[in-house]
Amino acid sequence: MFERLLAYFSKDLAMDLGTANTLIYLRGKGVVLNEPSVVAINQDTHQVIAVGHEARNIIGRHGQRVVTIRPLKDGVIADFEVTSVMIKYFLTKVLRRRQFVRPRLVVAVPTGITSVEKRAVIEAAEQAGARHIHLIEEPMGAAIGAALPVEQPYGNMIVDIGGGTTEVAVISMFAVAYSESVRVAGDEANEAILRYIQRERQMVISEVAAENIKMKIGTAVPLEKPESIDITGKEILTGIPRTFTVTDEEIREAIKEPIEAIVEAVKRGLEKTPPDLAGDIHERGFWLAGGGALIRGLDKRLHETTNLKVNIAEDPLTAVVRGAGTIIEHLDFYRQVFIS
Image (tube, rainbow, N blue to C red; front, side, top):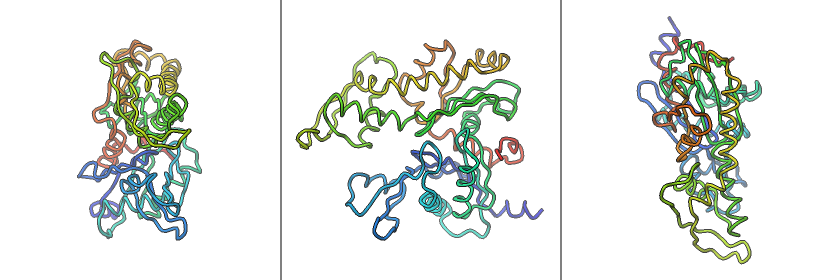
């Protein structure tokens, strides 16, 4: 009874604590925050200068005293103190004022997270002001966000391509029948573009520019009509800035290895899926979620490799947090999906 009373007054939340972005879902309101997982700190005073969008906007544009930190690496906490600051900032921004009742929180974490990493997430959320913290696996959140019938005795295959990890999972009856997490995703594609341009063009560009290139002309298969983009960088030999043009063919070559790693992870998932569940996947195909699902032609590339139907979740960028939000809206129904 007391717990129900607390729940009535509490503004319960769900969070996708991602390597690239943090998203928050507020019960009854939907997705209310989507900001980069970046914190800017003054090295001399250890004071937080900016968080989220503001911090990302000053990457590469600040003085020597300021450092920008991405406190999560490969989907898990790499810097506990900075992560706590970031979570507290985002929760305060969403809740706007001090709450009489501390909120319950569902947090999506990568498959295969260690007990130490789980404890770090929970402690960071507790320090940020959450009351009860429940952890779910990101693929489960993505599957629920994609409206897959995870409670049914059917094989639901989801491929969640985030910033730091690609999660491949087969889910049936609230349980993960198979899962694998590979630390190749959007960030690795960005780094591949940086290396390619440095090697082939003798130019240095920023991480933000590399991500922009990936989003604008990054493809997994050849396009019917070639595309290109102008980008500004700095010549390695002279240090002089100049603008140059890169083509979709070059970027496709640059991100070939990360794309191939994702394709191989999907193939392994299909090989290791139990026969009955594999039959369900053969009938209905599998789903892509996460920002990586937006790379043009990736669904086609996976279809060519597997000969299965490849579906892209509605608004794949928010699939995980919307799934976690569905759980916070129907906590009793989805209680079985929590990980210890």
